[in-house]
Image (cartoon, rainbow, N blue to C red; front, side):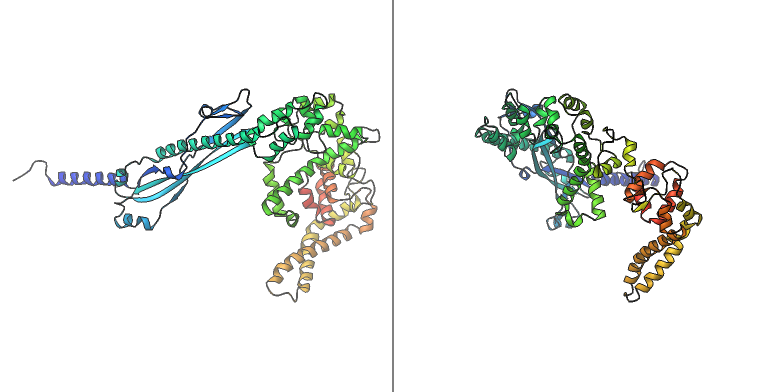
Length: 524
């Protein structure tokens, strides 16, 4: 008996289709997972209506946290979990899944969190976070996870969890608002000191916008600026004042407009105050670095000279550093000038850091010329150089703007190829070897390399000085000098950095002063 369409070729084709179908089914079913939001992973919360001392532009929040009339505006933000972050899979609990090759699904647990906050004038008044989890089941070869009741896809479970988290956030906000309202109601808000004490305590941060406005309203009609100065340290206080009053209260302590005006009235000179304004920039930055080191390492003192730690601190504060006089606008500066502060003084009340030359001059002397006017940039630059050879470091350029004779002698002798390398290194290596005859093997190589480098530098320097005619000849050929290599680097780079013979000057100077090249490279 024969059957139609049952030829060997047809049977093979049908069998191949069956294999492909089974393979496709296995592909789609393997690794399938289902999720079930775990209601017990977060507290059950039901939002309730509460009167708030602030206004939130968010309909879902305003439904429960209802603002008082004329309440100041704040920003409410919730950051829902975008994905499930953590995952754990208990081994012992999944032995049945292992034995049955996942016919019984593999059980796990995924975790995530959502956060919410209230912000006013760039400061966080309230923050809340809630963690939650989902139960998961995964089948490697079988679709059995889909048979578990109450499960859904990953995204659906996450949406359900985030909605529950929002209810928890709103309930927590309502709880805090009610509690802080009670603290505020128990305070004598007609007493400036009592009100300020509450605001500084941190016990009622959600009342900060309302309480700050109330405190400002208590200022007397006369001498209101002096009143505001007492509370200008309160977060957000200055920002609620009129611009003309803000101007006098912005800046570091001791250098606010109101304090500068008082100092002038007490007889302090414009020049001295200008120097303080200039030096406030590096001092303020140094303070920020120290605070960062203290926060990360506990004590800045042991790490003060650690170059690596300092580099980390400088890089870290670079993105978050608040410059001196941040927030002081042109309108503020105009108000200060109109209020009696000298224009030349107000011009330094800026976020822009002064030049390194200006900072160096401010540390050593007056910023006013003989004519009584502020020094120009060129005059400031000239303050870095001594008009004699009594300084510690001789200038490679003379007062005529030409290379000193010792520079030509050093370079003509081709010291650049021998002082710090061949002659210096050979002498240094020999001296180091003799000095370390009794140092244990291993340490000798490490220490000897460092000692040899230092001795090599010094030997190279002495050789360069000798080739340049000796130290007395170098001094005799120089009519300009500097008190520090940093001053010399700034002066030479700014004044001669684009000249044709600048490289010759640097080459010879680096032979006499081996540290000069690195100082020059790090100088702006």
